Image 1 (spheres, rainbow, N blue to C red):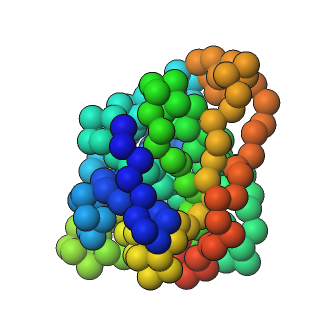
Image 2 (image 1 turned 90 degrees about the horizontal axis):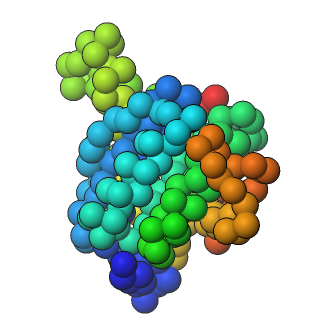
Length: 199
């Protein structure tokens, strides 16, 4: 896996965006020039076996992804609650899975306030009935998260969000997740406050 980094200090190439939910996980991808994020697929969340985590890691490997952006849901006041902890734990599982495959693909948590609200609005404006939103809203939200991140990277000339580090190999992730809580390590204190999901 190449770890191409731009002169500005952020990875250049295909990136994945991930919107984590308790039931579904949305996945988006962007092109090699990191210009446009596109909805890719929606996975069923399997917290017992983490099969969805493995699917995303395999996709990153197959596409030669240089980074994975996971949405970090905060409240409008910038606070982190249960959904933010869930996203952080998911990012850690993903980082561990990528590491176990020998892939040096960074996983960053990026503020995603209002991303789901925006996704629902965009689908409505596109003429899709509210009943059909459920099938694609997670991947559309993931595309919004990824687009926001790549736009911020270009605007700032630097990486964005908080980098998560895979747990030590001595920590057994098992089939059900991490044995003990491990938190994200800030890669950059820059966080956006104008995009993400409302809690």
